[in-house]
Amino acid sequence: MPCEALSGTARVPGDKSISHRALMIGVLAVGESEIHGLLEGEDVLRTAAAMRALGAEIARGDDGAWRVWGRGIGGLSAPEDVLDMGNSGTGARLLMGVLASHPLTAVMTGDASLRSRPMARVAGPLAEMGARIDAREGCRLPLTVVGTGDAVPIRYRVPEPSAQVKSAVLLAGLNAPGKTTVIEPQATRDHSELMLRYFGADLDTEETDEGLVITLTGQPELTGRRVRVPADPSSAAFAAVAALLLPGSDVCLPDVGINPHRGGLYETLREMGADLSFAQRREEAGEPVADLLVTGGSLTGVEVPAARAPSMIDEYPILAVAAACAHGTTVMHGLSELRVKESDRLAAVARGLAACGVTVEEGADSLTVHGVGGRPRGGATIASGLDHRIAMSFLVLGLAAEQPVTIDDGSPIDTSFPGFVDLMTALGAKIVSGTGKP
Ligand code: S3P
Image (cartoon, rainbow, N blue to C red):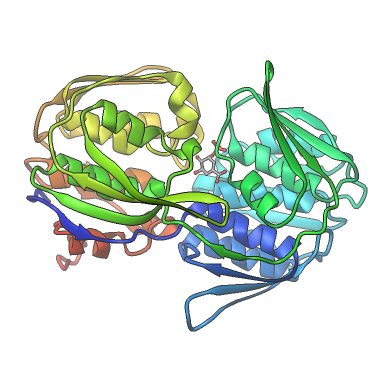
């Protein structure tokens, strides 16, 4: 619902990418790992359940910390039932990598969104390493991974910028003798590399003419560690943009991960004139972290280059909302990967903005948003389409619009940002549920 300034301090939940990796790598280590600030969203809980089904012992303490008793590399056992990864592409694809180099058979499925997403990008390199992946037509879930105890280390050039594909190959490479190499023409988030190193893996990276070359030495002994998961910059983005769009706002979001491979949105918002800064920079478990300070003000449209896409791939829906309220036009390039996220985000954003009275042009892999220079009309009902980021982005638009925006189904928000409505409400936002209660 339309509202005035936001103010206060709020810690958004733990980083989704890092949480999945902490659980998986913790299970592959020897000894106990303790994870603080794990995201307790549905996606990550599905990963925890899958790791338990593969024989791992994982428990949440009364102090909120998660403890993982590692099985060691190669130590997983075959699950007795289908692994249901819910809505999570990261959970599914990274786990495929882990399973590929274990001598076991596992069947994996997910919700309607995940079952529609392409898995060939992961199945291809994992098959080269010796695993067999039998999938539904179009290489979609449900699928069966027949892993191998004799995985072959490969040299793999990732054709599309995808941290999930890179990570799947590296995780499979953990149980392959010798060196597994991944080449990234365009660098993507490096949480897997940072965490593997933090747990003791031998991993080198080198910038070359081909791109970033990442080399992992197989069969290391990983040792259980203490991990503190930073607040998720992709979740902080919703509160930050809401604050920017509501003049007079003054918000602090502590402990946010500021990994440069995730920083594209914040760079773009600054170019648009946002008053946004990072204070108290520090490091947690190999990841850079800071407190994000945001002050409301007016924004101006910009051109966002395709090269920036990997560092803000999950943030285009909320950037498009900021662009809708900005003065002038924003053009975003290099968006083809948005079409294979939890929904076709390019189409969903274009459709949703148009329904809210904003003029947009949807290209094959670009989006042009003509900002209204203030509050857009709003007043539409948006289908979230099992996509948490579409739901949250349009709720933020509703705060900054003239008329309320309704989301048909807010339940997907819990996959990545449990407590979203409460946190936003505490900052002064007006979001009411279907029952009419806040
Ligand atoms: C993720 C990588 C990205 C991103 C996703 C999380 C990860 O996906 O969209 O939300 O944790 O590795 P792609 O690898 O498909 O770009």
